[in-house]
Length: 292
Image (tube, rainbow, N blue to C red; front, side):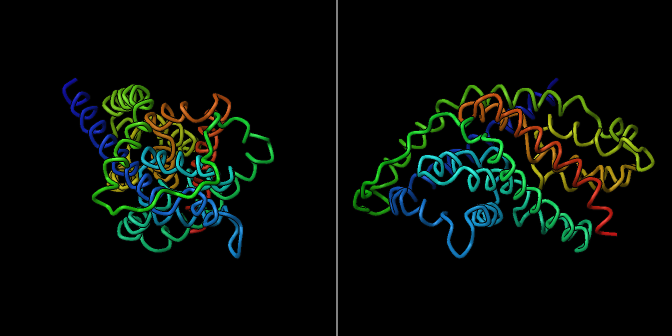
């Protein structure tokens, strides 16, 4: 019980700090450059918009929850649905900290395979969402009009209004964040590694799907999941199941899913979770094949 409460407190504090920091950064970017310039940067050009969303996700080492203020800022600026969704999927799964950790712990072949498989799936999924008309499932976001941003007054004078904007973004997400963290901490506290290893051993044909499903309810950042993955592999869990668990846990944590209900309608939230599950299962089966 005490371990669960400690986990809940630490995760909640971490999320609050990360969300506040990213929200302030996004507010400062919007005040310095204006939402129209952000939209222009992310529009189709020499590079398609979704590829820009993928690259932005790669260079922003956020956990799944701290992508949300950036996502909200992109939606407000009028960045296209497919580009925003590519960023949402890629940021927690393809950041350089995760890739570097995979290289160190599993080798460059596994890291390259993970990067290629995950990048392909995060580009294809938003395309499918767009074809299915899921853009209409984004809750009405007030798009900033075609007005010039106010004159930049320097970081010291802009930090206070940026903090106010960050608080406006954070306030409606506080309750969903607390609920999601509580669910994740409770599940994390009662799922022992030994039990997972017993049902997801390397010789079990159902290991990858079970690991993918088990990973989604856990709030475990990918960076944290890497050493856990090494321990699980040493305990007999196959490489595919380890990565299915990592993709599921990093891509769709309970706090993120809970907070997404403030931006997405239920159908898109369900589709998002299902996409992460399918990505985790496909990745779990493909990564060992292409890295062998």
